[in-house]
Image (cartoon, rainbow, N blue to C red; front, side, top):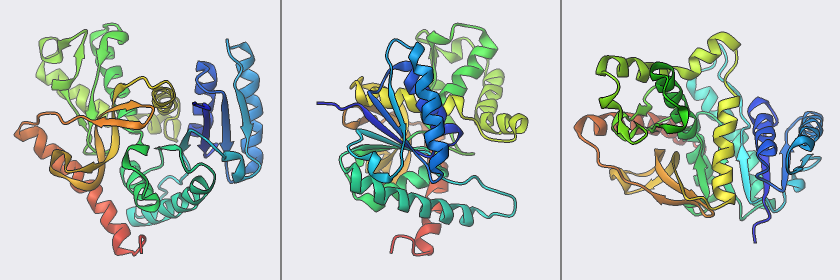
Length: 314
């Protein structure tokens, strides 16, 4: 039977907002916030639980005093990691965050060995791969959250342009969570009507550009990365797992001969349910889409290769 306990590692903006969002939704019975700064986790947990008093369901939300408080979580969300700073190379960022993930994984393996993991740490696809390699768990139990966010950004841009109701907009973004993400116009629609029938190619190019630069646009104004939309995307994925909703959601997963690739994590459409990834959906790709997908995979593979060259997995 589901215990509906969710652990969130990293009580920063994304982690705390995820806890708040899940609390407002009433999705979980219990949420545990874990952070290297114990007081931050405890303080935010108290504040968030107090906010759920006005919800139809009060969710137990605690700040972990020790990693053992993460015991028996059904889902663990990893938001821990550092952002890239001035003077920091891509290799520096990869090594620093991979080491953080390594420490986090040792705690999850000890206290929640049967959990499903949702990775939100960046670089998203590479960190998701790191979790696979460090745990050797079944691949369906490890999922990278990127497509949920990027697809919501594409839907937002479509809505801003058309002014049609958001509930009818279905957007699909695959590939890496970065410069080579692929907003798929042929897999997106409004009320079942293909975008090509509603939006010109020129305007669609602008929507794609805005989608790919959605995160940068927020950083420009805030000076920091987004957290409300990522948190909502994470919460939808958590709910799909806890409620066995079987929703189709693009997510970063480990491929095993799907799309002609193996031993690499990349965003593709999957079915999310109680087992995590219930199924990887293989879509037909024309030559142009396949070329873009290959570029995405190559970008992710280059990050994985940096870790291998630095003997991280040895």
